[in-house]
Structures are given as C-alpha cells and as structure tokens.
Image (cartoon, rainbow, N blue to C red; front, side, top):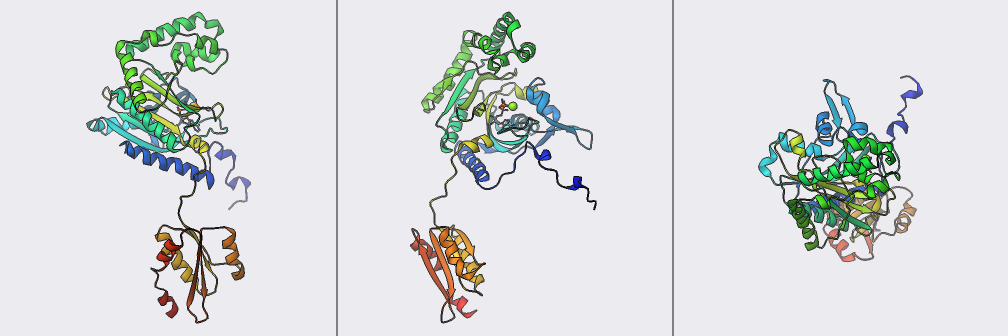
Length: 423
Ligand code: ATP
Ligand code: MG
C-alpha cells in the first residue's frame, strides 16, 4: 500500500452536502418517520417503494427543463451501459412512472405513501443538503376535491402529532382548470410586460418560459410588481370555483384552519387547482415544512393516460429540527449490575428476560466491582437489579425500583434461579 496521503478517506470535502446522524438527531429523524408511518395507516395510504435510480427522462419530462431542479440540481450520469440515469430528486415523478409501467390504474383511486433519500446538487448550507430525505403522500386517479381535502387533513394531523402545529399555517391557492389558468397566465404576461424594465434578470427569463413563477419571486425588485399582479379569482371558471370551494369546505368540516395565499403558484403546466404549503416562521427563510398540489397532467406527460392526481412532500430533516426531543415512553427502565465475579452469565440472562418483557435494560458487568453499583445509581434509572453471590454460594438478587417494583419482580420470578445455584 502506498503511503500517499490521498489514500486517506477524503473528508469533509467529499461529504459536503451530506449528513451523518448520531444519537439525538437520528432519534428525532426516526420519530418523524415513525409518526408518519402510523398516521398514513390511519388514512388508508398504502406503502409504496420506488427506486432511487430512474431514467433521466422521467424527471426531465415531468419536472420540466426550465425548473431549477432539472436545469441545475440533478445528479445525472451515464451508467456502464451508456444509459443516462438520475438519482431521484423527488418522489412524485417516480411514483407516476411506476403507476404507468405497472398498470396500477386498476387500483385507482390509489392512495400511497413513502419516504426515503433524495438527491439534488445544491450549494450546501445549513438545512440544505445534497442527500436529504422526504415524506411523501400521493393520491393517483382521483379528480375529487375530497382527495385534496383528505390529503391536507392527513398532513395537518401529522404536524399535530409531531407537536409542531403551533406557528405553522396552511396556506392555500387554486390554479384553476386549464381554461382559468390560460386566461390568468395571459393577464399576468400582459401585466409583467408592462413592467419589463423593472423586473429582475431571473424574472425576465421566467417571463417567456414560466411567467407564473414571477409571482413567488423572492427578489425585492420583483416584489411590488408581483404584488400588484392580478389574482386568478377573476379568471376562474365556475367549475374551478366549485372545486376550490369543495376543498375548503372539506377543510372547514374537518376543523383544519387555512389561509388563502393568492401568490402561491406551481410553475409547470400540468399543475391544476389546489396548491398548498404549510409554512412556519421558525426556520428563517426556509419556511415551508410541507408542500404540494394537484398535478392532473403529469402522468400524461410521462406517456400514460390522462390521470388526475394530487400529493405532498415534506423534508424530514426540517421536521426533525422543529420537533421537541422525543421523550422516553413511560415505562420501567432497568440497569442490571453484576456485583460478583463469575456470575456474568446470570446478568446476561436477567437482561435478556427483562428486554423480552419490553423493559429497556442496560447491563453493567465490567470495570471495578466496587464501583459498579455507584455507576448504576449515578444514571438514576427507575430500577436497579443487583446480582451477587450469597454466603451460601447461591445467586442473590436485590431489586430497587421507584415505580415498577411489582412489574419487575413478576418478570424476574419467571427465571429459574435454582438452576443457577447448581451451576
Ligand atoms: P426551496 O425553494 O427551499 O429550494 P424546493 O421547491 O426545492 O424548496 P421542494 O422540491 O418543494 O422544495 O421540496 C419540499 C421540501 O423538501 C422542502 O420544503 C424542504 O423541506 C425539503 N428540501 C428540499 N430541498 C432540500 C435540500 N436540499 N435539503 C434538505 N431539505 C430539502
Ligand atoms: Mg430547491
């Protein structure tokens, strides 16, 4: 082996934008996922798994060439067979692709949920990674506004159960049906053309390709022009109005508070009707904790039949930063202390029996014998089980428990102590 320094595992340059997690944060992360898994079952969402790698066309076609994700952020490369593949930057496109290629139309309307890693070539900074993780929920093959409303009630319950609904607001808009959207778009282009000279460079580029996106520009130059642009309301068809009315009526019926945000848009043509974001004031500029909308034209763009669909996604890292540290469940926690040499195996059996009875248990059976009990006391567990050798040569057991004495003694009574005396 060469002693070349470059043979060392490169760090941190090569791991910029990725994140290792240990202990507290990893626990929070897991708690977010566990809560999501529990709540999605309550709402009848089936678990779905889609691959991390997809043909590049799946994302290029569905996300649109002009979006930041496709133009700047995709991890795309040629594999050994010369095919262009991409590490998924989001879930929706892969799920839509799977819906088409597997013939899942037969299950429509199909409610699915998933979570896992996503990849985007971002400029690494706090809270923004190149590998990050999302929760995702989608309803495919439903054109009912109740699907939108139910997805939002599901999202609201998830945030409630994570304990982060305080300071989080559901903001909602409608992009109407095709006719409403086209008419609104024309009016927006006219408005922005009239202020062409004052728009930021980015927004000038958007004016041709993606004028709706100017509405949610963060550039202070654009804000007054975006704020004075016409709302969609004047252009909504009766049908589009009814649809939005049914979504908000569903939310009101379920007791989920919402606010209209007429500037909330999705740039791509296949977005229809509902667009939404749960926003918080607790994360500075990165205010969105969960977002999504209806994408009735996407599956067709991927070569499938016209299919109405709606979904949302939420960044797990962001949710994990917002939640309180998940508390330990109110259960006995025990430390087993082996206070004599030669009976380590007893400690091992007792620990195994306690753990099988669902008691979180640590074993102290090494280090200075005199100090072992004190080490256990210092950690202030609910229960200490100390094991020693009695004068008669048998194993002696002492239990100290603050709250679970009876429960622990019952568990320990299942052990065949006599068997140890004879060994
Ligand atoms: P932004 O405008 O912040 O870049 P986006 O439009 O790219 O957001 P979406 O594609 O809608 O974000 O993703 C939804 C959620 O995924 C975000 O609200 C965020 O919580 C999370 N997310 C997106 N990109 C990253 C990233 N690079 N690192 C960590 N989380 C991310
Ligand atoms: Mg982004």
